[in-house]
Length: 171
Image (cartoon, rainbow, N blue to C red; front, side, top):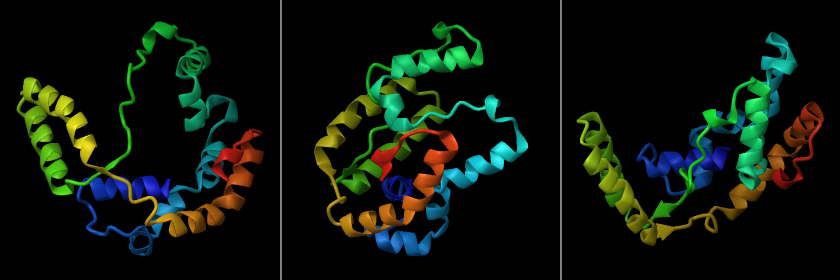
């Protein structure tokens, strides 16, 4: 969760730090947001647990259709209420041309505000071109990611117990 928040902040120009450890030091709350067990415990104190349907992202992505059917059943609505995208909508990447990418995001936001949907569509299609400028800084930040994963271990075990679910792939 914390690394995802960092990458999103970096992509959208909310941080100039190209170093995950520095980002964590400057934004200690991003670690706390990843302690899902604490968040769920607060909700479970306020509402009956049977009012919640918790999905783990990785499980959802393994079989989205089955999970949406499960969700529809939980909500007691028709499966036809959900339209699954044909491609991944929110893939993570860090482009080499970071400044160019940021300008494209700003231009797309402007196009949507001005109801210039043709331009927005063109920019989004062109976004696949920016993926060729992709850069993956995960290797640079590997030690920080490994340290963070270690710090989350106890919370992940508690979440497994709370949800009575195996999420060892988070460990």
